[in-house]
Image (tube, rainbow, N blue to C red; front, side, top):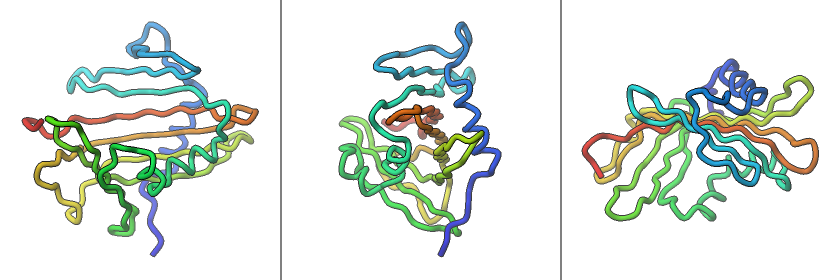
Length: 185
C-alpha cells in the first residue's frame, strides 16, 4: 500500500525559501549559540512556553546533498551509528508512513519517544536541485504512550539541502522541540 502525503506543497516551498535567507538578522530575537567549522547554530525563545526553536546553517565540503538526504531517511543505518536509539521503526497507519522513535536518556532521566510523520521531496527551484525533508509529531491510537517513557507530543523539523557547487552540501535545518509531559524526570 502506498503512503499518502502528509505535508502540503506550500510547506515544502516555505522550507526552500529559508535557503535564500539562511542567517537570522543581526540584533534580532535570534541568538547565535555557536559558529564553528562553517556551521552556525541559532536559537529563539518562545515567550509563552520558554522553549527554544533552533536553526542550523552551514555545509559539509565533502558530502553531496543527495547522500545526506539518503542517510537522513535511512532508519536502519541510523540504528547502526546512533547510540541513543533504543527503538526505531516505520509503519503505515491510515495510509501514512509513521515513525516510532524511542531515545535512550541517561539515569536519572526517563527515555523519550516520538511518533511522527516524515516526508522527503527532491525539488527543483530556479534550476537548482533541492532536497527537502519535513517531519512533525502525530497522535495515533495505534501508538499509545508507554509506561515510564515520556512522549514528546509536539515536534516539528525541516531539513533543506543543496549543492555547494563543488563536491559538498549547503544545509539549513530548523527544529521545534516541545516540552514533554510535566512532572516526569
